[in-house]
Amino acid sequence: MRYAFVARERAHYPLGVLCRLLGVSRSGLYDYLGRQMNPGPDPDASLRRDLRRCHAESRGLYGRPRLVTDLRELGHAVGPKRVTRLMREEGLRGKTKCRARPRTTDSSHARPVAENLLDRQFDVTSTIPAWVSDITYIATREGWLYLAVVLSLQTRQVLGYSLSDRMPDDLVEQAFLNAWQRSSGPRGVLFHSDRGSQYASHDFRRTLTALGFVPSMSRKANCWDNAVAESFFATLKNEEATGVYPSKVAAHAGIATYIHGFYNPTRRHSALGNRSPDNYARDQMAA
Image 1 (cartoon, rainbow, N blue to C red):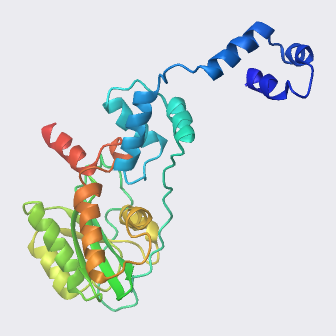
Image 2 (cartoon, rainbow, N blue to C red; image 1 turned 90 degrees about the vertical axis):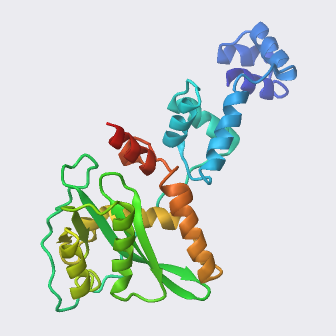
Image 3 (cartoon, one colour; image 1 turned 180 degrees about the vertical axis):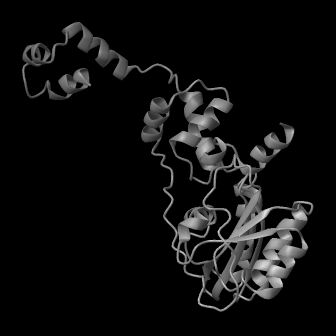
């Protein structure tokens, strides 16, 4: 930086004065100028190429921590500072997740609610097998869609989901049954949700009980009791559903591609040691 300053200012001030004030030598300056005029091959060329590719394959979403992991898996011996510098030089940035605000919960009903058995035990190493679920809204130019998802607490996989033009009681039941079929019908699993009327419906509670699940619900007006599901929705709206879809068909296709083509198989998750949900689940099965 000192040589660059001297080279830039030498047209305005005596060269000897600049070198003396900044503590640099004339020979060092001339060597610097020679390197600037005849730059050698970029030692980071391969790293830059892989950095750009990893960032593009993440849909432009990954920041430094996940890119460091990607590059190390490709065989590059890199640290966070070096990746930060190269990202700055390449003009690459990750996307910051916005906090989600639940707006789809109708808890003003007379249906029975379950006790909060999960009690914010969200760590993936929790010994309590649990699924979490919630509903959010998706904007399209043809009107709203409502999305219900079911995630595994232990792997953060989206096990099942359902989209509908409205929020009927069977919206969450369909998402749950999709997850149950994918997971080969486990029993004794905690099923945690908010107190929305869909989750408290007679038919859905009967389905949960019949398939051996134990219901658990957040405390009233406390979205943090269902933070894992809320976090997924924040990620979805930051990375996929970032605006208004042109049609409901486009929304269905975009969300399906995001969940099955990126989030579950590829997207690195900080709670999973920067592994994707599917890879983490396979590692757990192997262990």
